[in-house]
Amino acid sequence: MVDRCPSCDHKYEREEGYWLGAVLINTAFTIGLFAVAMVVWAIAAWPDPPWTAMTATGIVINLLVPLLFYPMSKTLWVAVEISAHPPSSD
Figure 1 (cartoon, helix red, strand yellow):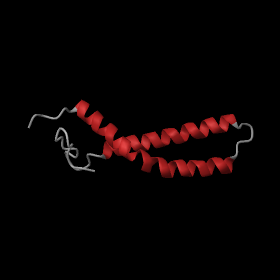
Figure 2 (cartoon, rainbow, N blue to C red; figure 1 turned 90 degrees about the vertical axis):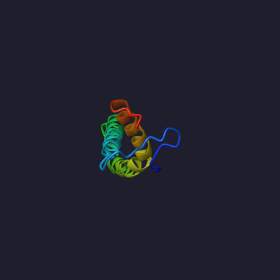
Figure 3 (cartoon, rainbow, N blue to C red; figure 1 turned 180 degrees about the horizontal axis):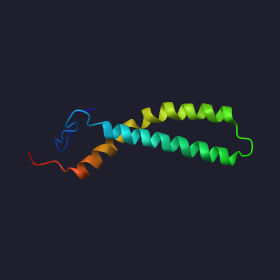
Figure 4 (tube, helix red, strand yellow; figure 1 turned 135 degrees about the vertical axis):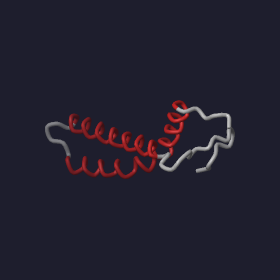
C-alpha cells in the first residue's frame, strides 16, 4: 500500500498502531459473517444439521474472509478516521 493518497497527498498511517481499527473492522466482519452463516445453516437444516460440513465451511470462512476483506477494512477505517479527524491543511 502506498504511504500517501496519490490525489490528495493524505498520509494514511499517522502513527504506530494506526491500522488497529482496520483489524477490528475485519475481525468483527469475519465473526459476524461466520455467526450468521452457521445460525442460518443450522436453522435451515434442523433437526439434523450436517455438523462436519458446517465445521469445514466455518474453517474456510475464518481463513479466507479475513484475507479477502482486509483491503476493504483498511478503506473503511480510513473513511471512519477521516470523518472523525479531518486532515489539517498542513
